[in-house]
Amino acid sequence: MSAHVSRRKLITTGLTAAAGVTGLGVAAKIADHCGLIPPDWGGIWGPGETLTYATQRLLMASGSLAREFNRSEVSKVVPVSGPQPKTDPYQRLRAGGFADWRLTIDGLVARPSAFSLAEIKRMPAKTQITHQACEEGWSFIAEWTGVPLSYVMNLVGVSPKAKFVVFWPFDESWDSLDLPDAYHAQTFLAYNLNGEDLPADHGAPLRVRVARQLGYKSVKYLHKLTFVDSLKNVGDGRGSASPAAGYSWFAGI
Ligand SMILES: Nc1nc2c(c(=O)[nH]1)N[C@H]1C(S)=C(S)[C@@H](COP(=O)(O)O)O[C@H]1N2
Ligand SMILES: [Mo]
Image 1 (cartoon, rainbow, N blue to C red):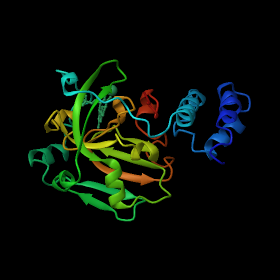
Image 2: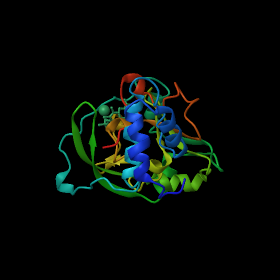
Image 3: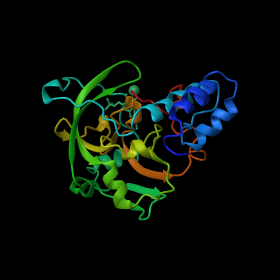
């Protein structure tokens, strides 16, 4: 479908139909063809999830930026949601200063890799001050330093077939992003918070920061990234641990 076909037509016909239930099959076909169906499309909230995701993807340029702040606006308190895993192998790696930790990258990439923390810290670093909002209602502004995910993606040679990247942490809170969000200029693999090594409870040694989505997309305690063309066979097939807990896969703000 050519880009200008009818973004408007798609919204006014296809998506309106999706919102109302009639024509859902046709709307779903159009939307799937254009990469507009989120992985948690099934179930009673499915049409709503699809409408939200597709509308965002059509109306907002995928490169649009979240607001960045000044140092003076950094919050004094940084709350924790999802403290560090208390079990091995996380605690063993932490006790060793994460010297034996690796970020494994596999799936649809030309060069499957395993990077040490030192190697990641030698990659081109970028710092940003952004707002992180938890779905439970609190939020904070913090300064993060890390490497843009796009840099790592270019290094490993992500296949043109890949559509999503899955983030695997040491706990259960796995999640995924579509490739437009993975390549987004503010999507970071962060190892530093407010000028210091990432504290254990904030995701040491490495977490992702996704500036335009709710906090739960910013997966902490990472050990592996997997590039896939579909999320159907990953976990319960809904793209992250969140839908099972009642939250959307797509959490754009
Ligand atoms: N691995 C992992 N990542 C996670 C979580 C978690 O429990 N485990 N909690 C998420 C939630 S709900 C939020 S709001 C943010 C909180 O980040 P913070 O603890 O650094 O404030 O991390 C997200 N990333
Ligand atoms: Mo959260």
